[in-house]
Image 1: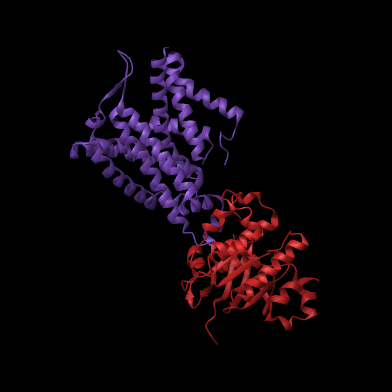
Image 2: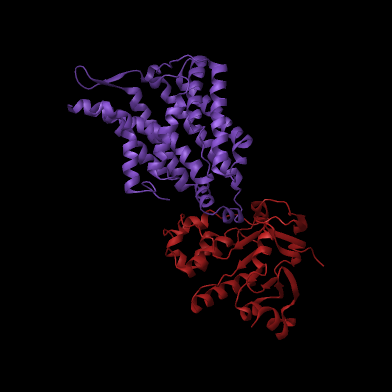
Length: 235
Length: 287
């Protein structure tokens, strides 16, 4: 088996005294798509923040392509090719659309620049019309496009999307799903967290279901039975 | 007041305001971006003035002293940030005030040991020592005009740095959402170090160019510090453009206050602050 792109073992994370993650294992290979599922408050975002170095796990290890990054600063982990589209989008409202994109620009680890400023604007023509607007002046859908475009400007090998379609009108959400599918098909590994389980299962190679800080299911998407969905996701 | 007297006071007020801006811009950046209340900021101004005194004495000219002094103050900024300030970013304001007040005492003591407690003067460079005659008995010193010009250039440079460069975008991004900036690969700690050193260098540079007109004396940072906090509050905390506008307002108010209402001059800038805060509690430029 080839070396995983990102591998975490036995992650225990806390918010203050609250024990949130109880020994979670996580693995994603190059080009793989993983659906990270679970109800609210089950630890999905905590897991993502632990993987990216924003929250320091009290126990366990995180490795990016074999390199131990458990104690590394978040910016170092990001520079290893990990990009993040956070819940709530994290647009910089005091920067223009253009600046939001430019500030993130970086060549990929192998020196490739597949995603240039021009290509982002081709992919998101709506953004091209609003370059001089402040990030805070955009509609929800436009902000989401900007967050995804900004993440792609770092030419990542792994894109983590946390609730990318939350709060968007159905038509806009459909556009975002089309974009996510395009990113996945371009060979970028993706971790997708979304309430739309059908769409996630349709895209994911593998699904992981979390309940109360533990992974209760981690297997190919086809094996995600109706029982598991019913029991742990409540749909 | 006739036209030429008015013109002279106007130029003085603008020049004083621009000088305050150099000091206040660093104070507002460090406050707005890192959340640090830096009481020792006035000490950097004093250090700059004493550096100008020593280095101009050593090299024989203020022009050669300036680049050397800037170099020393940038190094001082890096060292202070690394040794002291970076440990305070996550702390409560009370800790910041305690430590930075302590630094004032340390700086004053070091100043006393190194330079003594006497008042010193720094010569205006020959090239700028002339005065422009306005009328038969009124003239304006070229050096003060040059000070204003240099301050304006620096204000323009600061604008370019913050608005046009990627470093500026990272500074603004980091001040709006630190975690997101880091998730995009920005080394925010290094950005903070650079911003802090920039603030120190700006304050020290202000002290250097002010040395020939204000002379060099113990505790000279304290007065500047207080008025710079007034500038930061009027301008809106963290806003560099607010600081520029507020600094010039303060400069003009103080200068004309002393001429027109000499009995109340000490209060004029604080009255201005009170009025602005009644009108806009967050300052002129809310971030």
